[in-house]
Length: 296
Length: 296
Image 1: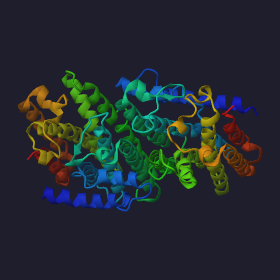
Image 2: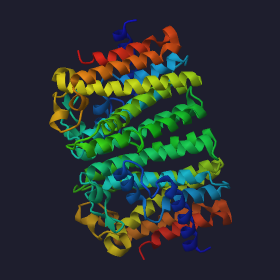
Image 3: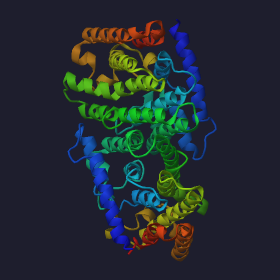
Image 4: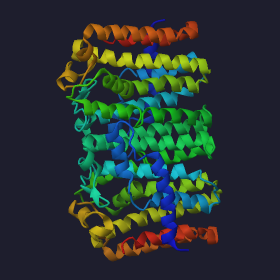
């Protein structure tokens, strides 16, 4: 398969669905809806919703029931970026090559646009369970698992520990806590929610979980490596900012070579977990390999 | 009935449930969970969750199925207060007689604690629909309606327009938009979610909706009147702050007498809407009357 074409095709489907959720012609109040849209479009590679769709399909899920959940996961990802970029948190001026939401719309609107995207995510997921292709029990299960993954014991825990560790000497265990929570929780739950909504068997859920955990951490290690080696063009922001900000990174803690070795190991584990799916596992396998190639 | 005793009894039940949701012994990361708890306890009168419980009971809802939803609504209310108080928004130093969350824990943790409370609200509601007394379809309906009411077309729209109107001359229609959305949406959905989860008939839902709309607006008018007449002791913050901040209020726009007349009219409408329920409607009737007495 051609992974580039696969990703592009999925991104098109997701972007078309997001267009309907946050339309071009903003509702009242316009500033809020413009800010929400500004953060969502053009967006990144949509890797999280693509993971949800790929996991759904690998376990035999049919139809479009996964799409609102895939979009909801992208809204959650986007809200977390808006809030992370705020002056009180990472104080980032640029994201994906353009000024961050609060730089354009002001802090108040950025905070509220993030809140609105998170709220809209849950609205999307519940609405699909009421009148869509997904039955209420599956919808509730997905909401349950996703809300846990991105809450105070999941993604937000990672954000808090990340901020509190800035400028401090931290151990590998703390660095791993930050990454498995801040980045890893959401990536894992994308894969798991896709599997769950596709009615995966237990053994399939177990395989998807191993896959999701491995790529979640690999994803973050790649980001850290990119921060050392990458260019502004490939990252949308200046390289070296994590180091400049005294954020602890894998290369800083383990060295570049060891970081790369760990990354390779994780990708290997992720691919191994997919054995169960045979040929059907190809999209997920290609996505795992793709994660590391972001640097080139 | 003794409304004071009724409210105290319900508050006790709600606080006991909130104690389990956000335990005294904070989970890791401690700062986050401490901030969440700081904002929740001791809290205010818990009028929103009480409204949900009272509406549930008035339509014949049995058991404790309503309780997680009542608590979720209080978490949502609390998250909205934390974010509203932030320097970028209302920049309030005090809330309910104590320093605001960001004053104690810093802005970053306050933003994330608000995010976490909102997320936890959805987790609570979905979990109850999985293994609790509420069936999945009812749970999904409640989540659907609540997420809409507090999203970019509801509560958050009110917050945005409120901020954008500061220091500007606004018309009554804008003031009403702010209040029906910023305060009214959540109060209305408390009443409606209680009715919905208690399996209200259509005619009962219609009555609860009229009741909820009227008390929602009455609640805000009382707040505005309190800002003129109230004392720091009864409000937990200095009187006159809305005026000082150039927030438009009912008394400023319509005068004190006309504001009071409108308030009386709304309470009358709310009580009228309850006729259908006969004697069973008494708790909701007493709550409507109680709303105005907050000033004394």
